[in-house]
Amino acid sequence: GDDSYVMTAYVTDVRHLEVVIDQFAAYGQTTTAIMQSSPVPRRALAPPAQGLGQPTA
Image (cartoon, rainbow, N blue to C red; front, side, top):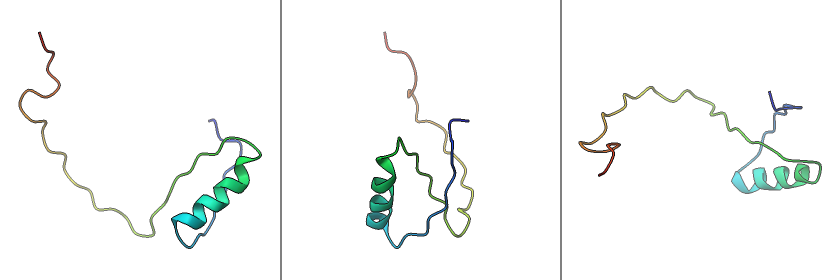
């Protein structure tokens, strides 16, 4: 993949995460993924509303 390094960081809040990312940005482009401590329950997708995604004339 595109990732050269994978790092785990434990931060106190979003602002703290931004500070950590900013420190690494001096060395190259960063990509961030957030993992939650508990799973997110699956939810069914609702069908699209009538007419959405249809080409217009």
